[in-house]
Image 1: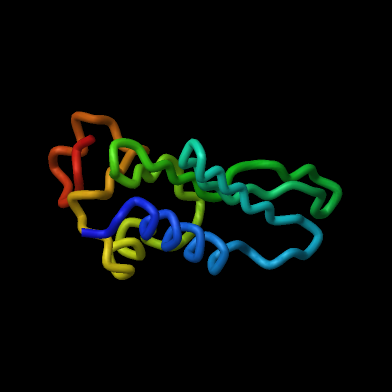
Image 2: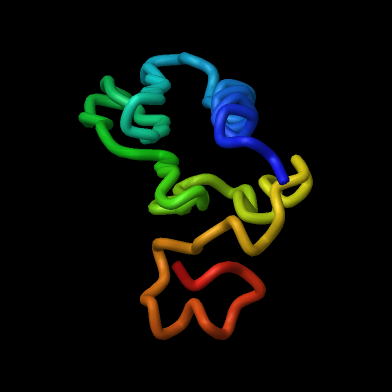
Length: 108
């Protein structure tokens, strides 16, 4: 089983690898290892419209990775599994607790 520090390192590297490249809109990588919050946000202007919002939000709670929001086209849970993180350590936090019991992943 991966140590918590190893999980943090994997998440950090993963987030940095998938952050959208900067164009008119800036991608910001927010990593808080003290509280275990990991996010990609975008902020700026595109075609005279304001862009600001969360692209990806992961947390580590009770030694499990919670996928709080996934605004990418990637299957983030599967990407984490591909990095060697067991399904029982991944929680699909964007789904209700009731629905999580029907997935292959952790309930909480």
